Length: 137
Image (cartoon, rainbow, N blue to C red):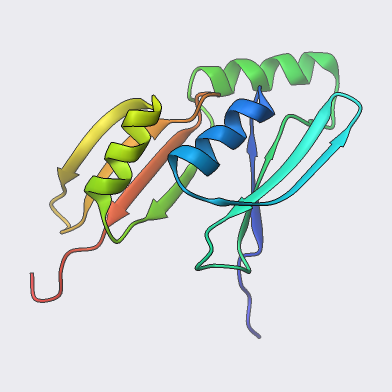
């Protein structure tokens, strides 16, 4: 049996801001954008991984109180976000910072060998990006 990741969902408060961040600051490609009433489902992904998608959505199946609770948790940064790999962490970080991303951690060498950084998307979701150590390091 071969099980692979197809997509994950990231709850956002402003789909247009989220799209700008994931597309323009991080360089992901827009794959789909579906609107229905006041809700949007925006699918983005890396060109190098055509089978993996991130769905940015402001849709929540639940009561208005559930929506308010999720919005508050996202805004506080309490929801898990996404973790990316980059072959050039410094360039990726600088592009996101120049876009205006909220920096949580600048690129840092970690004890396990990787370098990584952290930022928040416009909704407050944590986004981590790492770069594997060079071969032989």
